[in-house]
Image (cartoon, rainbow, N blue to C red; front, top):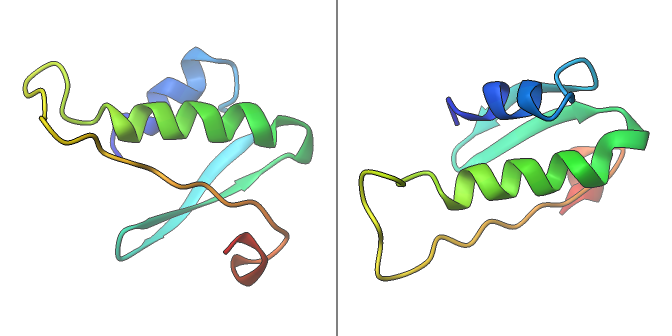
Length: 75
Protein backbone atom coordinates (compact mmCIF):
# COMPACT_ATOMS: atom_id res chain seq x y z
CA UNK A 1 0.00 0.00 0.00
CA UNK A 2 2.85 2.38 0.77
CA UNK A 3 4.18 1.92 -2.78
CA UNK A 4 0.94 3.00 -4.47
CA UNK A 5 1.32 6.83 -4.27
CA UNK A 6 4.85 6.80 -5.77
CA UNK A 7 3.66 4.44 -8.54
CA UNK A 8 0.74 6.74 -9.35
CA UNK A 9 3.13 9.68 -9.51
CA UNK A 10 5.51 7.74 -11.75
CA UNK A 11 2.65 7.12 -14.21
CA UNK A 12 1.40 10.73 -14.06
CA UNK A 13 -1.77 9.75 -12.20
CA UNK A 14 -1.09 11.43 -8.86
CA UNK A 15 -3.28 14.43 -9.73
CA UNK A 16 -6.16 12.19 -10.86
CA UNK A 17 -6.23 9.46 -8.21
CA UNK A 18 -6.38 9.78 -4.43
CA UNK A 19 -6.33 7.00 -1.86
CA UNK A 20 -9.19 7.83 0.48
CA UNK A 21 -9.11 5.01 3.00
CA UNK A 22 -8.50 1.37 3.71
CA UNK A 23 -11.12 -1.03 5.00
CA UNK A 24 -9.65 -4.34 6.17
CA UNK A 25 -8.02 -5.67 3.01
CA UNK A 26 -9.46 -3.07 0.62
CA UNK A 27 -8.04 0.19 -0.65
CA UNK A 28 -10.59 2.85 -1.61
CA UNK A 29 -9.60 5.49 -4.20
CA UNK A 30 -11.26 8.48 -5.74
CA UNK A 31 -10.19 8.57 -9.39
CA UNK A 32 -11.04 10.74 -12.36
CA UNK A 33 -13.23 8.70 -14.68
CA UNK A 34 -10.84 9.27 -17.57
CA UNK A 35 -7.98 7.67 -15.60
CA UNK A 36 -9.85 4.82 -13.92
CA UNK A 37 -8.68 1.96 -16.15
CA UNK A 38 -5.01 2.94 -16.13
CA UNK A 39 -5.11 3.63 -12.38
CA UNK A 40 -6.63 0.20 -11.69
CA UNK A 41 -3.87 -1.48 -13.68
CA UNK A 42 -1.12 0.40 -11.83
CA UNK A 43 -2.62 -0.35 -8.40
CA UNK A 44 -3.15 -4.03 -9.24
CA UNK A 45 0.44 -4.39 -10.41
CA UNK A 46 1.85 -2.68 -7.31
CA UNK A 47 -0.24 -4.77 -4.92
CA UNK A 48 0.41 -8.07 -6.70
CA UNK A 49 4.15 -7.45 -6.57
CA UNK A 50 4.15 -6.14 -2.99
CA UNK A 51 6.65 -8.72 -1.73
CA UNK A 52 9.19 -8.17 -4.50
CA UNK A 53 12.16 -7.91 -4.70
CA UNK A 54 12.67 -9.17 -1.14
CA UNK A 55 10.50 -12.26 -1.35
CA UNK A 56 9.17 -14.26 -4.29
CA UNK A 57 6.08 -16.16 -3.24
CA UNK A 58 5.34 -19.62 -4.63
CA UNK A 59 1.63 -18.70 -4.61
CA UNK A 60 0.71 -15.55 -6.54
CA UNK A 61 -1.05 -12.64 -4.90
CA UNK A 62 -4.29 -11.99 -6.75
CA UNK A 63 -5.78 -8.49 -6.64
CA UNK A 64 -9.33 -7.73 -7.73
CA UNK A 65 -10.32 -4.21 -8.70
CA UNK A 66 -13.82 -2.87 -9.00
CA UNK A 67 -15.08 0.47 -10.23
CA UNK A 68 -18.24 2.37 -9.47
CA UNK A 69 -19.63 5.63 -8.23
CA UNK A 70 -20.02 4.11 -4.77
CA UNK A 71 -18.35 1.39 -2.71
CA UNK A 72 -21.41 -0.80 -3.25
CA UNK A 73 -21.26 -0.43 -7.05
CA UNK A 74 -17.57 -1.28 -7.08
CA UNK A 75 -18.28 -4.72 -5.66
